[in-house]
Image (cartoon, rainbow over all chains, first blue to last red; front, side):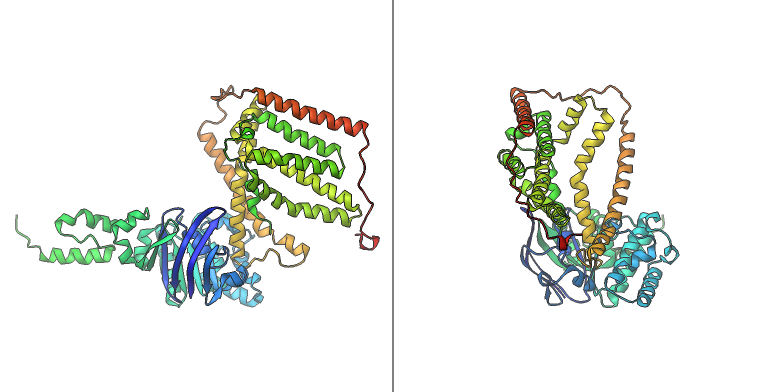
Amino acid sequence: MIEVRGLHFSYDRDEVLRGVNTTISDGEFVAIMGENGAGKTTLVKHFNGLLKPTKGEVTIDGVSTKKTTVANLSRKVGLVFQNPDHQLFSETVFQEVAFSMKNFGYSEEVIKKRVDFILETLDLSSYADSSPFMLSGGERKRVALASVLVSDPKHIVLDEPTIGQDFQQKDKLRNFIIQMNAQGRTVVIVTHDVEFVVDCKPRVILVSGGHIIADGTYYEVLSDTALIQKASLTSPQIAMLMLSLKDLGFNPKILDIYQAKADLEQRLSNVVYKDV
Amino acid sequence: MLSIRMFEGFKFKQRKTPIHRLDPRPKFMIALTIFALSLIFANVMVFLLLFLAQLPLVCISRSVRRWLGSIKGGAILAAMIFVMNFLTGSTLVFSATMTLRFLVLVSAFSLFFMTTSPDDLGLALEKARVPYTLSFTFTMAVRLVPTIALEAQTIIDAQRSRGLEMERGNLIQRIRNYIPILIPLIVSAIRRSTELAEALESRAFGVTKDRESLVELRMKLSDYATVIIALAVLAIGIYVQLLITLPSLDTGIKMPALWKF
């Protein structure tokens, strides 16, 4: 369980987080959303102890992040950074993915088994002997993801996972995240991508100006236009379409394509077609 | 661990102070004078004096906190200089002298870069007839130092998140621990420079040979006065070094030979 109590954090004199309180239970799927500079990344960097609270406390499975090292916390909390180029350095994809396992002291046999498995899962097996620098942006992003997931952390934090991913990769990523979550892992994503959030349907924590301004189901948060605007986000396209058709009796609170389809089907079934 | 934030001490911040208002050339003259004096002297008292003499300038420029940051960052290297000198047979005072020399230079250039805008620096270089492409490259490099420092911090964070412990192992291992930091940093810097070059070329960089500047640097009375003072200090320094024997404070204390490498 990730518990954040009265968290304040300042970079020098700039207070970025101003009294954040939240609890993320084991196995939960949470999206942290908000405008640029809202403090989202700063918040998740507290989850593996990279940043220590100026005031307040963050505990991971009951252990305060102030009382343990980043290396220890990284075994439990896997944090995947936004830009894969900030971590790739090895000669091959295999070595890159094996890096954290080596740091954690696993045997060569276990490392090989785990790396092969994660490369297979993320559709990277054919690149195992390639240089990570020669891959496309989306592939490098998946290598970065694999290099963190390989050690099988209990809690997974993904910072802007959809940036630079094409539609198909995004879809695969969504399935993969949902699968990880279904296996009991806590998944936290930091994102601006409202469409992706609507597809994934997680709990949404909305951050603005260093505070949590909303915390609820994706539907409760993303259907609130005022909240969305306050956090400089945009509503999902379906919601915008429904809002523009409000005068015709459409429900502006519909967020995803399946709800919209059901609503349209019901309306169309009531239409009496007349011969022209 | 060495904080990347020390590079903040080399980043320009606009402030309304007499030091900031000075033309970049007299400011460079001050830094150059300190640099020259640091090279010609090897006396601990002189370095102490040079170091302390900069404090009023730092206070006037209202950059004490960032200056302290750069000194704090430099202190780790300074400690290494002291230890290496002392362990390799230098006297205690000589080791302290070399350490102070380093800190004096860090301080002088930190003060220069904190108070001189990269744009003014570029103009000053152009005035000195340095080709525009070279002066642009230099000012761009100065401008990018804090950005690259921030990037380095992000890379350190990313690798620590994968279980890298920078302080783990013996000296060789600790040096090796920097490989996962340096490679992404170098690759990223190369990528950035390629993209920057393409962006510049796309905006017709270097097409016109004779450039005109919107802003013209003009030396004021205070700038001339600063140059004269800097030159006078340099002249006095050379005179003292050549004609006056300064008292040596070296007590000859050394590390026992048993501990020598």
